[in-house]
Length: 109
Image (tube, rainbow, N blue to C red; front, side):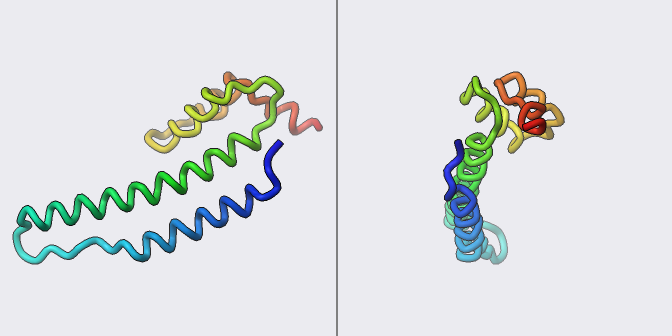
């Protein structure tokens, strides 16, 4: 059963992501980049990545918590949902059903 506060948590995660991204403008490189410029940009990319992964974790976990099915393989569910972040997956619903999610039963209820 999903937590009642999960919608609040995903909304908070979204707000936090936007706020973090607003404070992380890419460093300006003037002329040819030197090693310090590259290191500064790498740090920027890492900070943006951490903010995005934190947000994705909140949304994916909330989605997984809300899926219907009595015998869900949580590891497969999380893998299927995370896979959507690095590929175009038209098969995510099929992958979730293989993990035990039963969308057709939830629609009938």
